[in-house]
Length: 102
Image 1: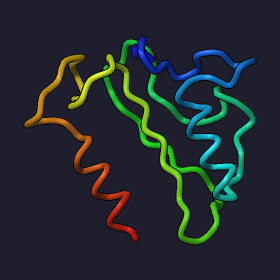
Image 2: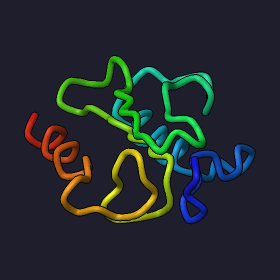
Image 3: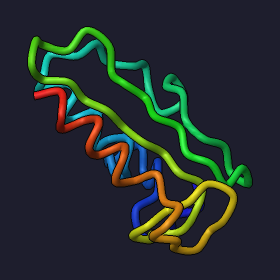
């Protein structure tokens, strides 16, 4: 949403941006494919929040999760702000939840 380094939809005709990266993994993992960048639940510009989206009906053992965050390209994103906060970031818990399912 507000990431100038890796935008959500950088160039639809060239399939550039975070959405297309996640979609490639989803396609490779047999998930149902959304109609396009506007077809999945994502955060909104100006919200300073994150939203987790799980692609549907992926092959067993091959889930794909895509997390959008309205903030810059930072290491420790935190809802409600656009700067790093290692003590309040949601990123480690989200990663642990994803990887601990295996």
